[in-house]
Image (cartoon, one colour):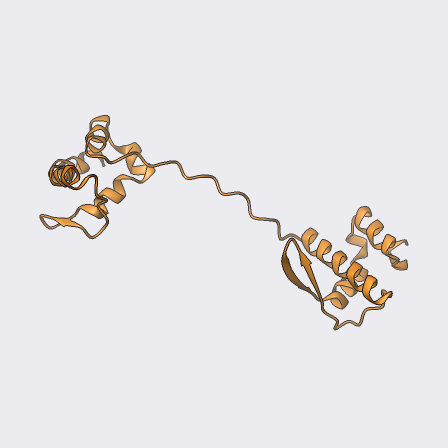
Length: 159
């Protein structure tokens, strides 16, 4: 791959180097052609980490002399917040707590939907479905989850 880049490198670096000196390091974007060759696309490809590492030291030095810098390492993106059932359980508990505070009861119609705000984001929780599903799947709940439900006053969570 490096030998294939040597000819375009020699051919295309002279003109951009002169243009950079004249224009004060102007950016060469894809679509800029010199002598029929898309130099912008070629430069963009040279700046990718994989291609930059494949270049020889001489090729990298040549690119650096005309102002082409090595690619900056991409910052690591933080992991996405979990969307596991644990998050759904916590939203359900928050909705149930809000419903109990507002109505004073834990008797929720199956079709009831509760609007809650968590960390500035509004969530719509199908509270009746949450309670029905949680009760029917209580055998799979952890002891901590059952304790939270029992603390809210659900009798079936204590058994």
